[in-house]
Length: 168
Image 1: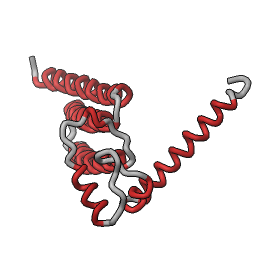
Image 2: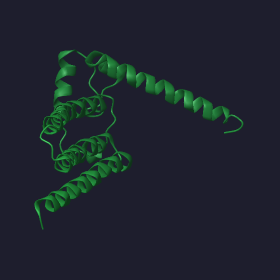
Image 3: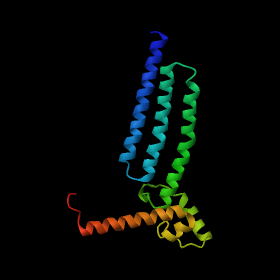
Image 4: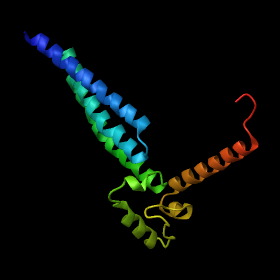
């Protein structure tokens, strides 16, 4: 077996495994029950899948000119995914889009309570949850999103109570 055949097999294996990892990330986004699980599925296997796809592409192209572009794509992925996952997780926590029964340790609960005490905001009823007034004090955007979601839910309940429109 020559070097070209080995490189072709390695490239094919990296492309297939990378594609399967990205597929697993997509399925996890659809199937997992809560925000934190979905956030995990969107970051970990997707980043590793992209890494394998880029390695497979580099092996397939066999061009040193493509290596800096592939490395740049990988670096942008590594820089943006943790930041976006952190922001999504933080917003989800503040707007109560998580399942407490799936958490083993809630490290952010103490931080939220201290911030509420410092700002003289009412203490949340449920550990880590923030009502609309407290959310406005801590994060205006999260409070506005929560109020908009509540208004949309009320509109949906009114529409359901009035009956579905003909043709639906």
